[in-house]
Image 1 (cartoon, rainbow, N blue to C red):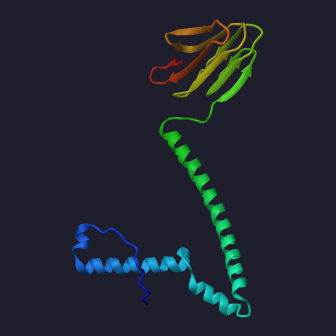
Image 2: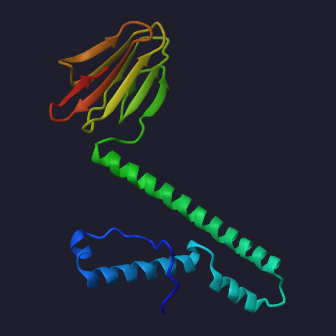
Image 3: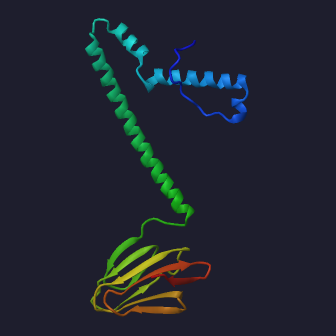
Length: 197
């Protein structure tokens, strides 16, 4: 079945080797033309076939009511399509971000805790120390590679942080002044906590 030619027809860039072969080029041109016509008839433009079917089904309905029915149907389909696309986009984005995070060794957001007594870490943590006595923070005894801990002191009492393995060549360090902070990362290949900030 041949449709009406459209001016200008949809153009597909062909490789030079195909464009030089007249039979192959004609086959691609015909394929592109038929594809374009199918697109037009399935929603890419005015769907006269669809309108004619509705007109036959509802011959007593006037032109305005047929248009209203088409608009109503289009709204229903576009809302369903939009909701589906939003769900798929969100799902794909979350999967993509998880994939990227795993590829780059990144993990979930760290746990943030306000502490006022001795504490032992267990994973990625941000600790805000609001203690009224001196306290000790013991870093995870079995940390994962690239495990991160941030410690922030917000008052006048000393915070000591220590580990079973070295933290920059020492087993123990102190945050001596109010508002001091430290960022640590465990590097498994060195079996050591490294101060990064």
